[in-house]
Length: 336
Image 1 (cartoon, rainbow, N blue to C red):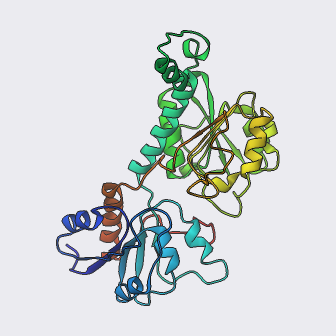
Image 2 (image 1 turned 180 degrees about the vertical axis):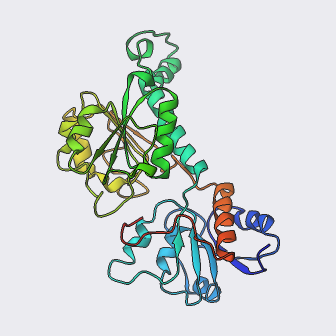
C-alpha cells in the first residue's frame, strides 16, 4: 500500500472528493471549496483558492481551473485533469514554458463508451427520422412514409472517424459491432501495434478529400491543435459524399460556424449533429440554433462522471506513488 499522503481536489463535480476519499482511505483528501466553482463554464480561480493550494503536491482539478494557475503552484508534483480536452491548458503555454510537473488528462474506456453511444444513437435516430416521429406523435398522426419507413441500417453505411485515439478506437469498435464500414482519418499512418482491427481503411494527411468522398457520416473526434483547427473549413466539405452528415464530438474549432452553415446551405452536408462549438455555451444569437439541418446538444456527448474521474485518478495515483509511468500524460509538443 502506498504511504499516506495528501491530495487536493478542486472541481465542480459533485461528491468527487468523497468518492476519492472512499477509494483512498489512507490518504488525506483536502477539498478546495470555492463559491465561484459551481458549474462547468465561467469559473474563476480567486486569490483565496490559490492560497489554499500553495502547498498542494497532488491535485485533482477541472482543466479550466488548472489553466488559470498552471504556473502558480510552486509545490505541485502532478495534476490530474477531470476533462478530456486540454486546449485551454495548452493556450497557457503558447508563450511560456510548460510546467515542470506532469499533467494527465481524462482518457478512460468508460468515457469513450459514452462517446460511442452518442455516435451510434444519433446515427440510428437520424436514419430512422425519430425526431419527426416525435412531431407526428404530438399531432396524433400515424405516418409510415419516407425515411421513417424506409431507412438504412448502420451496416449499409460508411462512417468516417476523424481521430484514432482511445475514443476513436472505441467508436470504431462500436460501429463495427453493428457491421458498419469504418474509415479512419489520422495525421500519420498508425504503427502496426496501434492499428485498429475495427477500421476498414485508413486515410492520412493529404487524403482528406478522398476520405470525405467515401463517408456517409463524418464523425470528428480530433483534439484542438494548430494542425486540426479549421481542418473542415475553407470549402473542403464541397468534396463530401452526397447527403453526408457531420457529427462533431471533438472540438468546435475544426470548422468555422460560417463555413459549416455554408456547407449545409449549399447541400454539401445534409445535416450536422453538433455537441461542441467554437464558443461555449453557444451564444443565443448563433444561426446554428434555428438552422433546419442542425441538431444541437450542450457538450454532453461524454461527461466527466465522478466514478470515471475517480477511477482514472486512483489508477494514476497508485502509479505515481510507486514511481511508475503515469497514463495519458499531456504531450506539450503534440498539443494533447
